[in-house]
Amino acid sequence: MGSSVTKGRGVRQESFPRGLQHGEMARATPFGAICSCCQKTHCTESTGPSQPSAELRERTRINEDSNAGRALKVARSDLAMDGLLPAGSPRQNQVGDHDQAVKAHREGTLLRTLEVNGQAEGASYDYDLIVIGGGSGGLAASKEAAKLGKKVMVLDFVVPTPLGTRWGLGGTCVNVGCIPKKLMHQTALLGQAIKDAPRFGWQLDETAIKHSWDAMTEAVQNYIGSLNWGYRVSLRENSITYENAYGEFVGQHKIKATNNKGVEKFYTAEKFLIATGERPRYLGIPGDKEYCITSDDLFSLPYCPGKTLVVGASYVALECAGFLAGLGLDVTVMVRSILLRGFDQDMANKIGDHMEEHGIKFVRKYVPSKIERVQEGTPGILRVTAHSTENAGIFQEEYNTVLLAIGRDACTRKLGLEKVGVKLNEKTGKIPVNDVEQTNVPYIYAIGDVLEGKLELTPVAIQAGRLLARRLYGGAKTKCDYLNVPTTVFTPLEYGACGYSEEKAIEIFGDKNIEVYHSYFWPLEWTVPSRDNNKCYAKIICCIPDKERVIGFHVLGPNAGEITQGFAAAIKCGITKELLDSTIGIHPVCAEVFTTLSVTKRAGGNILQSGC
View 1 (spheres, rainbow, N blue to C red):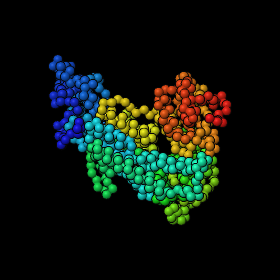
View 2 (view 1 turned 120 degrees about the horizontal axis):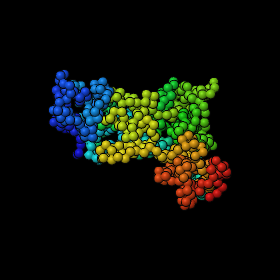
View 3 (view 1 turned 45 degrees about the vertical axis):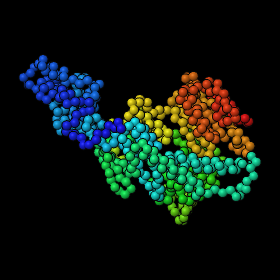
View 4 (view 1 turned 90 degrees about the horizontal axis):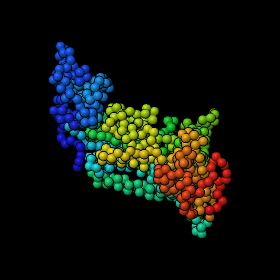
């Protein structure tokens, strides 16, 4: 199969660094001959190396570009960090202190250092790659590695929510994220379409039109179940071992897998990939875990949530509030500070305004301090007490459901990473990696939402996982590009974005060096029902010194994701304002507005649209 996994048991005391044959090791460490650090013979009478000694010393040189040189260079560096070898070497092509290197070799320290870096020849591993986390990124990487002939295992385990919710293989996006969210968003859009239908001639008895939460969740969960099954079949077809077990490092190259019955198994691998994602954060107040739900619970909730308080201003919070309101529920959003932190605030505020105009209530500058159950039931009644972030104000109200969407935490703190030395951001639990997704431990990699400073998006994790596998096992060089990644927030008025926000562009390039073109627009489909005139909005941010290259793209309107995906490719190719202007638009569609933008924020001017 092309696997690098060594069958059978390795004889470790007889192993040599990768790329060194027995003769090469003898030349690299000539016992009783010359110390490659001090350049002297072991003879204390010697005033300088003899000619035979010089010849032998020449034989001890190792080309740093050879396999032997690379292996010993890494080993020597690590041993120096442990205080076993001096930190420097006076000669470029020599490695290590002879006596200490010999001592390290005899004691097994040298070999263990090489094994930690995945460079020891003869090491016996169960797998080439073990992937911890069966989400979109982990599955993409595992399948790509298997296609390249590697022996791969995937460990995936869903820790139940405080309310006991759990799900199948596929990760957050498939089970409790993108997929069910978009389907429930579509449900709300259909509700709006039903309201518009009479204006287009459809004769409907609106009193007879009702929505069934049970029917919707059953259909959504059935589809998700089919995806779960499909992923398991795909792993089997690619000869990937899958275990529904929790992975935890217990030593170098070794992991413990614990299933839901508490049965433990141990596996080794040459390389590991951490792709465990994130889980919703709780408030840490009385009653939060006992009575509140998160997005992990919402999409399979066995009853209609009723009057709902959504706590948070993240995209998850606003998306959930939007489709719940679209189903006809009474929805309130409690916001601590700003909407959609990290996104363009001009767009975020327009989203908030639109939601308020459509009946969603906002309680701003308050945070919950206590959740109490007033009445049991499905749903029951909960009393929420909240305190102002600005003064001594207290807010108190009763709801059927409280949905927490205040952020997410990386699932890294219980993986045993400290046992193998993987560094974490202690505050966030995120993992710092280099530009090839490698942690500070050379044989351990990470992708997806656990990465520090990277976008938390499913397509990003998938791309990073595939490219990583190709680099590790296919000889590829391409790295994941984390710049100009398009995304969409599926609020009632959808928001698509690619590139810099206006605030970030000003911060990086300076206000004088950017030009912002913008305009409102009115989708043709909304004109007949006469709704939401001049609520949709288009904006591009251009870098003036770079021929007005488009560095930020933002759109509010229907099908924003479809629009943004197309323009993202153009932005990646370096599209300029001139090229946009020279592009002929498709009429009458929403995206056409980007080919006719002429008003800048700097100059001012009317951006309202009165017709097509």
